[in-house]
Amino acid sequence: ELGAFTEIPDYEERVYARVLPAPEIISVCAKLGIRGKHVICMQGPFSEALNEAMFAQCHAAYVVTKESGT
Image (tube, rainbow, N blue to C red; front, side, top):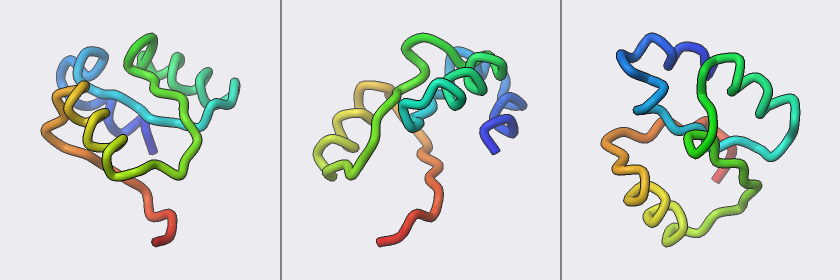
């Protein structure tokens, strides 16, 4: 589903992907053109404070999440 975000103009500089730290997932990101500091490899759970800090660091205007429970 991450590929859909490559339609955004200048996505390489605008899209950040927080993904599981698995080589195959990082490879998919790279193939899509999402690289370097735009790939955040972490495994949760994440606190609200950590999420807020990450969104602030990335200057996020929008956040897209997957449904993963409560």
